[in-house]
Image 1: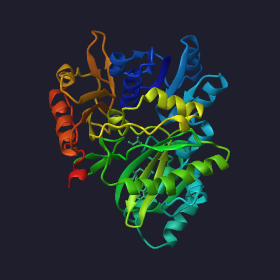
Image 2: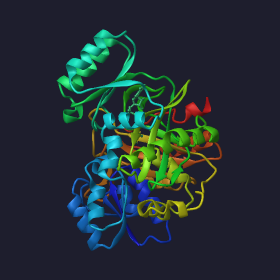
Image 3: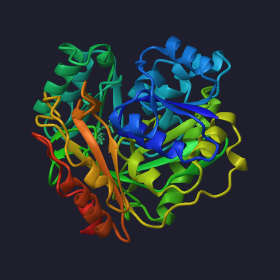
Image 4: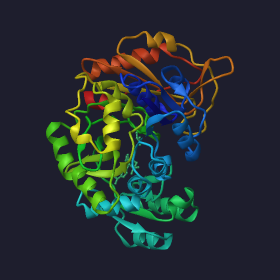
Length: 425
Ligand code: AMP
Ligand code: GLY
C-alpha cells in the first residue's frame, strides 16, 4: 500500500525510513520532506499547512495511511480533515491534540485524571498573575504561555523578578501572540527529565521504551533551550517497574479522562516527565513522536511500523502482539547550524554523508537539509542531521554515533559532545 508522511524533520525521515522497510509498503511519500527523505522515500512538494492539497494528493495517489509528524497540523485539525474525507490517518483529532495545543487544557485534564503534575495556577490576564507573584513567597516558578510557541513559551525562573519579566513577555508584550492569552504559573520541579511515549487507539495503550532528550544547547545542559540536541533509548532513569508505574498512574488515567471528555485520543501520547524525589510528575504532554526521541526509538524497533500505526488508526491495537525491539541501546546526536537556536546560516554543502553511511549500525537521519540546484545536499535548517547509532551498550552506541559525526562536515557545523553521558555517570 501507499503511505504518506507529513512533515520535513528528522522525525519524519525516521518514520518514512522505517515505514519503507515494511513488506506491505509500496510507495512512501513525504510532504514536503528533505534531502534525506528524497533518498529513502519520495518527496512531494506540498507544505504542511495545506490540508486540502494533502487530502487531494492522498486520494489521487491511493494513499492508504497518512502519518502526521508535527504538532502544528494536528492542533489545526488535519486529522479531522482526513477522517472527513474517508481517509485512514495516524494522529489525534484536533480536540484530542489540545492536550499539547493548550497547556491550560492539559493542566485541567491532569488534575481531573489525578495524574501527578506540578502545582500551578491558571491566569487569563497579566494583572492577576503579577498580583499573585507579588503576594506569595519568592520561590522558583515556571511561567508558561498556554498555546503553541515552538517550545519557547516556557520560562523557568529562579526568582520573582524573573517571573514578573516572564509574565510581561508572555501576557503584556505578547511575544508569543495569542499563545499568551492565558498563562500558567507553576512550582519549579527538580530532577532528571525522561520522555515516555505510548501508542494508543483510545482503548489499548502500548508504552514504548523510555528515552531521554537533551534540550539545552550546550554541554552540561547549559545555554538556551532547543528542540532537542540529542536523545538515547532506553534510559536507565526509568526501569521496567517505573515504566509500569507510569503506565498505571499517568498514561491509563489520561487516556481514560480523554475518552470521558469525548476527546478520544488516538496516536502517540508523549509524556514529558520530571523524575522528582516524590516520583514522576508530568511536565507536559505532546501528541506526536518526540524529535529527536523518535530516531533512536525507531532505530531499535523490529516490529513492522506500518502494521503498528495502521492498528492505531483503525482501533485494532489490541490485535498487535508484544512489540519486538533490538536489545541494543541507540544514541542520536544532533548536528546543528552555526548560530542555532538563534539566527543561523543556511546553504553550506554537507560533506562526508557517503562515508558515514558506510559505518555499520549508524543511520544519518536528515532534519534541516535540502538539495540545491546541482543536486548537492546543503543545510536548510537549525537542526541539520540526526546521527543515530546502535551499540552493545549505551557507551558503545554513543561511540558509534560520534564516529558518524566525525565523518560529516560543513562550515559552522557543531553538536553537543555529551549526549547520553547522564546514562553513563
Ligand atoms: P514543557 O514544554 O512544558 O515541557 O517545558 C519545556 C521545558 O521546561 C521542560 O522540558 C523542562 O525542562 C522545563 N519545565 C517545564 N515545566 C517545569 C517545571 N514545573 N519545573 C521545572 N522545569 C520545568
Ligand atoms: N524533543 C522534544 C520534543 O519533541 O518536543
